[in-house]
Each structure stands twice: as C-alpha cells, then as structure tokens.
Length: 108
Length: 289
Image (tube, rainbow over the protein chains, first blue to last red):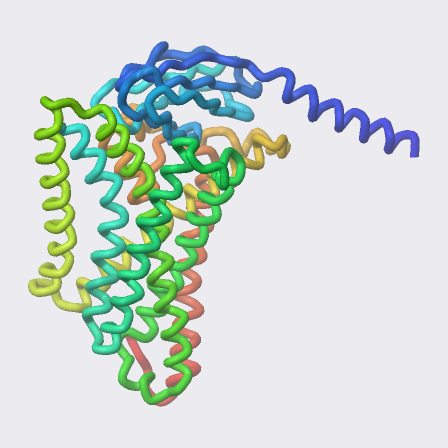
C-alpha cells in the first residue's frame, strides 16, 4: 500500500514537472516573413511557441512534420504547444504565404 | 493577387473534388436525382459551419475554443473519412445493380442513410477548408484600400471561374471516359481524400493526447524517413500533396502506422468482405468486376 502511494505521488509530480519545464520561444509572423526563421529548442522537452501575427494579413502557422496548424488573424497571438520533439530538423511555414521561404525548428 | 488566388483555389480544391465527384455519381443513376438535394444541403450546412469556425478563429465565438475546437476538428476529420469509405463501398456495391435492388424494400432504407452521408461528407469537406478561406478573405477585405479593391474583385471572379471549370471538368470527363474507368478513378481519388482526412484526424488525436501527457514510446514519435530534401511538405506542391494524398516528407511512425491501418481496412473491406457478401447474396450469378 505504501509502495502504491509512493508511485502515485511520483506520477503526480511527474505530471506537474512536465508542465513546468516547458521551453518557450517567440515567433513573429509578418505578411509571410518568419522572425526568426530558425528556432533552436531542446529535444525531448515540452516546447511552447508563442506566435504573434504582427502583419496586416492573416497567417497560418503550419508544420506537417510537427503536425501543427494554427490560423492567426492579423494582430492575433496564440501558443503552439509541442509535447516532445525527437532530435532533428523540422520545417514550418505560413500556409497563407507559401511564396515566402519556410522556417526551421532545430531540436537537439 | 496571385497568392490570394492560389490560397483560395487550393483550399477549395478538396471540397470541389468531393462535390464534383459526388455530383457525377448521382447523375449516373435515375434515383440519384433525389441525392442532389442532400448534396445542396451539405453545401449550405458546410458553408454555415465554415463561417462559424472562422468566427471561432477570430475569437468572436467562445462556443468552440482551444481544446474543444481541436477536438471538434479531429471528430470532423475522422467522421468524414469513415463516411467516405462507407459511401465508396456503397456505390461499388449498389451503383451498377440499382435496378435489382429497387425491387428490394431494403434498398430504400439503405439509400436514405446514404443520402445523409452525402450531406455530411460535403458539409465537412467545405467546413474545414472553408473556414480558412473565410478568415483569409475577410481579413483581406478589412485591409482593402482604393488601389487594392479592383485587383481583389478580379481575383475573386477568377477564383469562382476556376472553381466552375474544375467542377465541370468532372462532369465533362465522363463523356470521353467509359463509366467504368471514370468510376474507378473517382473511387481512387475519394479513397485518397479519405486517407488524408483519416491521417489528419489521427495525427490531431495523437498530438492532443501527447499534450495531455500521454507517455508515448519514443519509437512512435521517431521519424520513419526524411525525404524533405526531395519534396518538402512545406513547399506549395508538397503541402498540396499532403492535403490531397496524405503525402508526408518526414512522418512519425505513428503516422505511418495510421496510414497503413486505413489502407489495410480499405483493402479488407473491398477485397475480402465485399466479395464474400457478393457471393452470399448472388449465388446464381457470379459477379466478376
């Protein structure tokens, strides 16, 4: 019984720990420009990308490789949460401005 | 202006394919006339839903926000995938033998259910991409000036023209293709759209669970391959293929398994279950298709 309580407490702590250890980065999307175009993040960690559409046209943060999609009206701010990224390079893009170069998230 | 046109055309492509194919199928048998009403209902419902989703994106509506929005999208995509497979299966099963089945009372009940299937498939196909079109167009409208107004209107007109052309290509292509070939090609296109929707829904569910701390083994998260150097799914062509045919430049093993699961289910349904049912209901006449 004591072992069970111990395990449950560890489990609860592990839930809280993962929420607190989120690595936050900022991304600005402005009429197709991705600022910065490269994001360096730690691998196997919860990541929060705080996206801000500072342009006057709508933007869509999309990454097929990270399975994320978020439409942002002009001036809108949102957070894209990635639970865990295996080490590697993942491209992302503004789906409403495909004529601009894509960005890269480097997880290591 | 080119960007606006491309975005609107691309987002509309999926919905246009679905509507175009279903309309052609309905035209192929006399009872199909009734189904066109359901198709129209689906278009209306889908458009309303697109506006509602766009309002949620703008933050005008709090009915669907954050998690509920994500869950709603996942549910829509998975439902659409299931309905498409069911619709394709039904058409393959009954399409050519409709006269025989008209004599059978059972067919009336079956057809009712499938008319609604047409409505929901159409509605979902329009709603998702449509919401992005609404956000895109409305934002553009808000920032219009005297100089950008005319190009914008021309773009809209051109977009509508392209949409009609795409729609009628499906109707006309029936004239120079035999029904059998046309049906096989459109079956394949719809099944591919189903695969894409299924994969998007599964990936959405996967990400949702991950965010709620579902402890996934690393293997499922590891990329199975990386061909983004050949064709990045962040490029215009790549993202179009990703949307229509479930192309993935660097999929996680979870995505690969989901994709395989869909096609395995489709294979079993069409190559194992369907022949068995055909043999069971028509013991005298063997149907070899």
